[in-house]
Length: 282
Image (cartoon, rainbow, N blue to C red):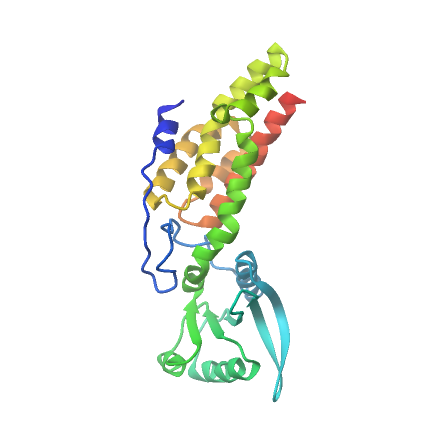
């Protein structure tokens, strides 16, 4: 086993309670990313789509551009999110991809809509922030005024738990079938191969075992930011030489501080590695 792999496998597990206002104080893992996305959506349409996508990936039942009836008529809502858990939760989101800060009138009008349709919480997500009067209008209500980063921070724990970590675990499990460190299953596969195939199989194990361990480390609920950074740096420094140029570029352009680009890069590389093993074992 590589010394790097051994140090990763034997990482000291830590239970880290978080204190951020938007994160559960009972969370058993530290949030190791600064954001879900690595950039602000460029258009108002993409702003709404990204908000809806994040909520859907968090496990909410989401509608984009819904019209909700209420006692005085109906209201057009940018994004609605419902969670059927007990007690059920109904969130409505107003997205403002404006060059100017949101004013008090917008907040007051939205507060009325949130009340009329019976939502638990109303979120206004603003590209450019809020005027002081807008914040006063939202005080002591069930509204939250958020910029793009604050919106991501509100949901990043749930997003990791419901979406990112399960996807990484799935990739690690499939790739792990070929890993030398999973033992019996990989050995059974290897035993069915010709000598030439076995040599190729062994070479692939050497190339991609670090990737398997990195997937498991980043998906672990109890490792910290410095562990993820170390795992990512080791992977970037070694595995890129075995990848086609498009995946090399994707890997080396990723900053491990944003979760989605890291997830997409690791998923692409894992699928490539699995394909390489499948080509040898056919």
